[in-house]
Length: 246
Length: 197
Image (cartoon, rainbow over all chains, first blue to last red; front, side, top):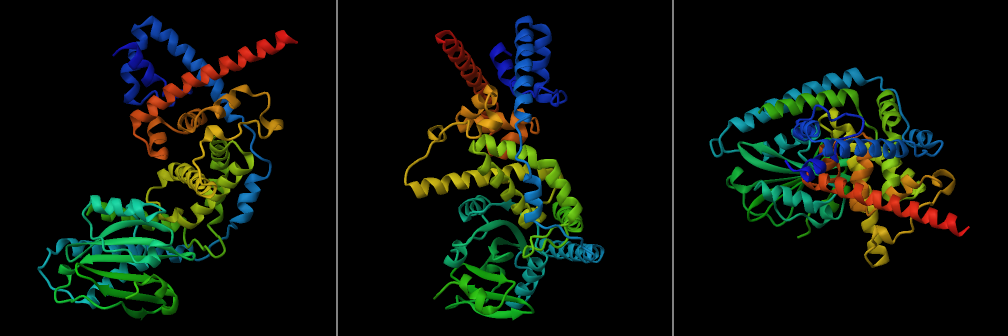
């Protein structure tokens, strides 16, 4: 290791020794013990870093900023937390079982109906699954999905126009299902896409079929390659803004 | 499959801690949220200030970051990544604001074109070190600020700024060199002024 290489590495060594156990620095640190010039440079560097860090850490923060933040995001006590936790745990277990079943089944082993698919996907989105990729924009989400060869149909303009949250890949009967979450007012809405092969016998539709499931509205349509579904926790009239117009 | 199990478990744990984020009331569990604000609002503000060089904008960015946490933080799978999530969100919000400014002004705005500190002389004047740091180009200023806040390792800086680790190390190294030059220039100017007087 040359002096220049060691210096470049050691430049990122934090002055309060937080990185002393990081193996990335080990060789360069050993080099300082053998090399007097490097050792002198490192001592100077740390002195410089400590001085700068002290200044940066003492930049005053506006008086009342914390109060302002807390005032704008009102905390509340949640009396239902235990009840909710138990429900969440049960739902998480169901989610896991559903995932297990869907992954275990090989593609094409069992034909499934559209109703099965809708029910299963709704069980996923009612308990929002953790996202694998988070982005406020649809572009990076598309790139992420393309890299993983996940189903990706044309995004309806109504969805493309709103802020996204992220995506993940679920499975239905062994087929990958793309889930894109996007902001609907102050709740989360969902766009799901799966290859038509997962639901044999379905033909392309002229437009979305809208249905209600409790407080939720779903819109499902089929194009040449994919079965797409939008699930919104709102009334059908409101959910229609996200559906493709045909 | 293990991943799914872990996800489901973590999800239930996070939901227990952050149960029912009520976005209409912007409500989050009191204890966790207050602790979170207490722990991070100062370093977040200082990072925001190093990016925007405007105290008011830095305060807005800090508040916006916590608002984002209230609406989206519950999706975070690993609680150990809260810090990274907050700093990354602040940085993204900053970039988003910059892009919007570019669109509105119809031209590319380089941060180096923006009037430099002191914008709040009463709070920063006399602190040549901080001024010199804030005068650096954003490509050096962002990683160096995180480095000097001492909250982040080089790996965490890479994650926050969405840069390769090697790039972060280069920018820290070069950024420091430029910071030294800047400080040396300031010192020379001070000496020249005092000699003129």
